[in-house]
Amino acid sequence: MNIIVPLRQVPDLVEELEIESGGKDLDREWLKFKVNEFDDHALEEALCFKEDHGGQVIAIALDANDADKALYAAAAKGADRVIKITGNFEGQVASRTAAKAMANVIAQLEWNMVFAGVQAVDERDGQVGVLLAHFLGVPHVSVVTGVSNNGGTLEIHKEYGGGIIAEFEVAPPVVLGIQAARQTPRYVPVAKVRRAMRSTDLEEMDAGDVSVNVGSQVTRMYKPEAGGRAEMLEGSAEEVAAKLAEIIRSKV
Image (cartoon, rainbow, N blue to C red; front, side, top):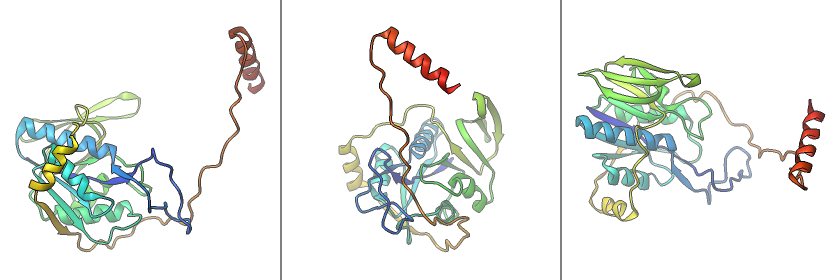
């Protein structure tokens, strides 16, 4: 089975985030990006599935925010093909626009499954996996924690609130929102990524018509307001415990 894995570059939340002067986007001049954590799990699950059952893994990414680096890293990990989707993707890209661009490209490929990250830190108007399924006209299962081949159909483990796991039997083609891979995403050293850059054919495909209703518009962004300061309790263990008990009583 051929598996498509969309890779999205998202802001690295470890960095200090600043809002640009217009107030509608982050200041992207020095902003660092990384592969969305859940997309990394989706890629790992796809590679594990290929190792067990054969097929191809095809990683795709929008042409923005160091997409080449993410795609070459995917090739170094074991992706068979890497495709950069060209178009105007500077600044904020709404989830629906990203999903439409990806769906346009996926529709031109031979595939059986799409493994998408279940969510991303920069989404505000929907999940890319759900929207991909909509644009492709195929079933979708989200919050997936396990995928196995069941003789032509797929056995899917989906997590619900409270840790409840449900099992679904789904026939491809299907889009899956991967929450966690069966194992920790594999590490790939920089030297291997550099070798992939020299030996991998980075394909390019045009996004086509991505004019869709994005669902919402950002009118203003604000930094969180600082809350009250922390109060440090000093003294012996008994004194600190007494002060803590008094604070709790005053809040009840």
